[in-house]
Length: 239
Image (cartoon, rainbow, N blue to C red; front, side):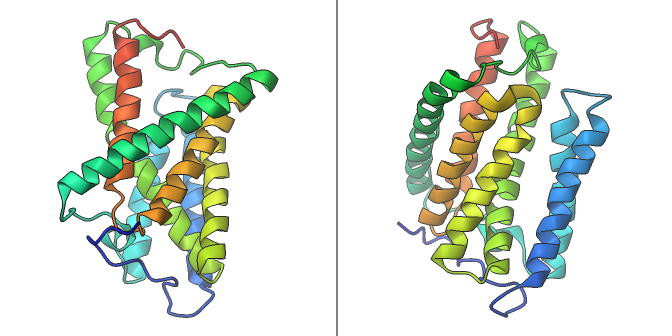
């Protein structure tokens, strides 16, 4: 299935088959994600992740512009058909949810389910905390994660590997592994496996949608996280 809202990003930012500029960009962004998070983590368990994605987004934007690209080339465009986009978002939401549930069944057999390790306990019944976390949900945890871990990671990794279906699939798998790792520090191996599986599904859907419209992924991710945070706010979720 292909969206008709944007053209696909070029297989290589430099126009050559193997783009070493792409791997330099990718390493720089991944290093920023890791270093900023680990630097902020001793001071803020809650904001270490968002601080790293905000920093990586700024760097990623600069690097894309330096290569003559933009986020629009990677799928961040105003859809021609919002009806179709919402339909794809619903499909993505259910694929996202099913992947998490199926992986949880397996992960629970081998690893303790620590939930979110109390990272969001302060949200329960706290309007100000809830509003702040919802802002982060629709920036850091939906737009930024999809742009960085799907659009940027997959496109730059695939460009380095030479483009084509094989390179795309390898890039999706690598992106999913890193996405799972990103959640390990507060969800443990159980959560890392679940988020990694979700990242794999989201990455495959990103390819299936033709890399031309990332909004279905952003919307489904945002709604999924919003539901979870709302349940925490209402005291209906204790992890």
